[in-house]
Image (cartoon, rainbow, N blue to C red; front, side, top):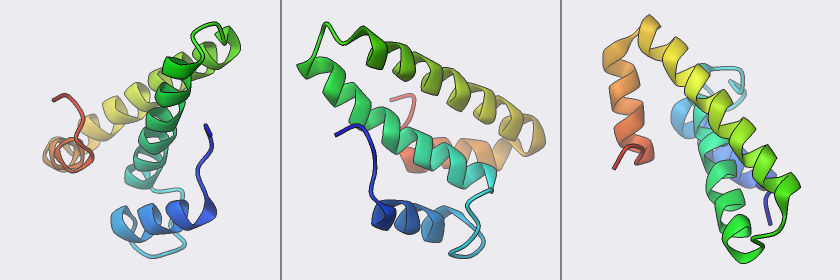
Amino acid sequence: MATITKEKIQELTAKFGANENDTGNVRVQIAILTERIKNLTEHAKANKNDHHSLRGLSLMVAQRRNLLKYFSNKDINAARQLIKDLGLRG
């Protein structure tokens, strides 16, 4: 499934946000997008001809890239730590 559960969103919000209701935080938004991208990537591997989902995946990747760019301009060290915590950029 390409979506994530409310429990997973709450877990990511508690881990990366200032509090459990801090869903607007850039760190939380990037973490949630990363989880959605992971799920949709698995879907794309199983359903190669699902071009609508592939478009959505590329849009999510672009949105995450823009948020990471914004966050790194704001605080480069925190952005690097977030990238390491999420396991991005191998």
